[in-house]
Amino acid sequence: MTQKSLNLTQDAHLLSGKERARLILKDVHEQTYGDGKGFLTDSERTALKRMTDFKVSEEYSYYIDVYMKTPHIMGAITEGYLRFKYYYETLKKAHLFFNQAPAVEILKDIVKDQIQDDKAKKDALKIIDVLQVIQVSEDGKKVTFKDTLSYIKANVKKAWLNASLFCSLKRVVDRIEDELGFSPFSGKSFNEQYKLYIDEIEHCIKEHNAFIERIAEDRDLKDKEDYLIQEPTYNTDAYEGWTETIFKEKPKDV
Image (cartoon, rainbow, N blue to C red; front, side, top):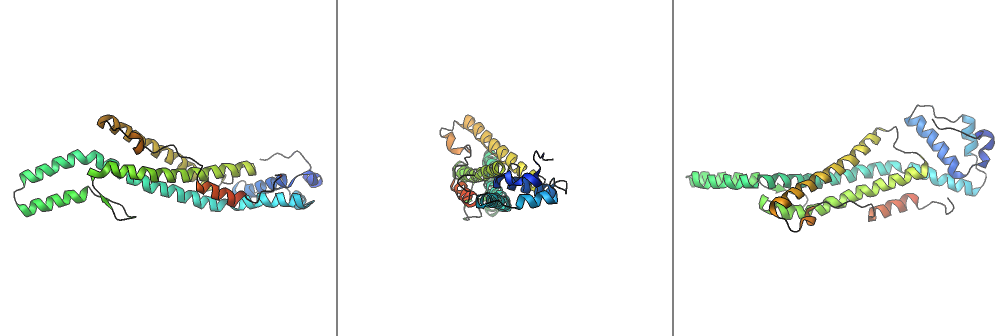
């Protein structure tokens, strides 16, 4: 429960637009996603919404607008996570094919040596080829285990870009929390999902990089860094775009 140190009904005129907005927004948020009651009385809410001048009103409107944009961020966060997972799952397939490659070659040799009927041999080899194909839906490419390393190299960059997109959105959320003084996700079911997204992306990156470290040691991979998912950065075009969209109207003195 938020603590009040002023008589807000009488002293609301002493508060800035920022302070008013933070109180009102947190009260509304607690009513909607918390205890259902909030912590302000009707008279306090009325007093806080009574603006003393244009500067106070401008500040107040800025923070209300920031809060109102949080649903858009929630949608973008989910999209960023799903984009990362798409490319990570393609990397997981590559891990699988890479591990299976020696066994597949042995199986091919057995088929070639042991099956005498030419048609049966051709059909068996065709089935083996189908089993080791990675289908990439975006451009229709087919990549066999022989191309797995080059496939990984091409896709780690895409995985990193989408992890960075998610990191950018997380940075925006952190800034929204700083601006409002509370998390706009608190009390929402999305809050737990958001935390799971953060943990899973971190886990996926560690899992992939551990796989690369292992094969780099086993196969003396010289350009190992090209196959690792690097540390994501928030400094992206997406971050610039979201900060411009959400925070561009911030009054200079706020």
